[in-house]
Image 1 (cartoon, rainbow, N blue to C red):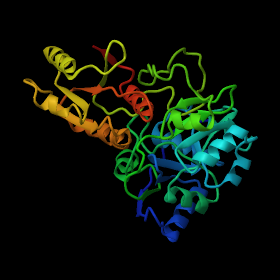
Image 2: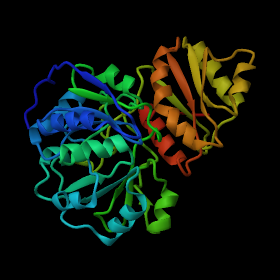
Image 3: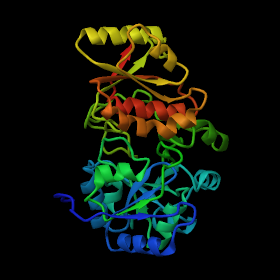
Image 4: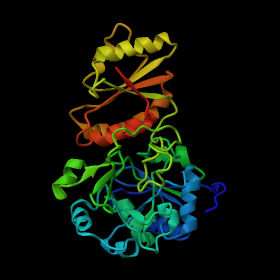
Amino acid sequence: MTLFSPRIVDTEFQIVDAANPEPEIMAHAGEIIRQGGLVAFPTETVYGLGANALDPEAVQQIFLAKGRPLDNPLIVHIADWSSLDQLVVAVSEPARLLGERFWPGPLTLVLPRHPQVPAEVTSGLDTVAIRWPDHRVAEDLIRAAGVPIAAPSANRSGKPSPTDAGHVMEDLGGRVELILVAGETGVGVESTVLDLTGPVPTVLRPGGVTLEKLRAVIPNVVVKEDLQKSDVGLGTPTGRANEGVPPSPGMRYTHYAPEKPLLLIEGEDGSQPSVEKILQAVDQLRAQGHTVGVLTSSENAALYYAAANPPEYVRVIGSRENMADVALYLFKILRECDLAEVDLILVESFPEEGLGLAIMDRLRRACGGQVMRI
């Protein structure tokens, strides 16, 4: 496809009732989608940037508005089972079981692509990623449009995903026809992406549905082998240069990153280092001329505040006892980092179980693979 520059438009805002969306507002939004325009809308995970998934030119506008690499496929959003007929060749038994258990919800399934799905959506792959969002506004928009909606997160490519409409306006104002404003999202990290086209069901991106929950339905689910390494550089593919187009968004590029550099702190054995060791690292970085902040858990915050030479900026992400809250506020806090009067921010690691797997994936990518082991 040939891309030039994004359309410059007057962005319209519509405040909508998240529990009971106004029909006239949704009809207007659906018409914009049908006419090839872009609508930013809330889901239970993050705000999405939607276009008609069956209109190649409309899909191109998503890439232009976001500055998104062309080899980063999109997720197609549906609001009923019958929509699958025009999107996938076949629905396997594992797909049916998982859909019945987790849809609507934060689970994306990678399935064999129907020829009707434009190559622009899938970056030329013969697979397509499908999700049924669990948010009344998202569902009503899809139904009002009368077409499946292709939608990545509604942010500039590489920045933290938006969890409220203000983030969307900050990144995409003037590039999207309509923003549906319906408060903050409820999960905070994106959907889990599960590939069902290979010999073994494989998690390509951890998210709102945990590995443990997936295995309760399909016991042989595995996590992509190199997922936990997430060793990426800005705009650089992970692993070998000839890996080709990834089957899922969020796999090849630095994502979720604020402007301020982040550094993930891990122990030599992969464990969470003590606050004492992190404070020693802060002192070492200060000696190199840095002003340093720390993103920490609520359990450790008081130890930083009480230190003889505390970090210049301390921000609590959430409690290790409530990983759902960590996930909910993670992207919002990453955006706040740019307001901190420091030039480097250290981030504590979290246990990689349950939602912790998704949280650590996002943190590694936000840090561009930069890890300090102490």
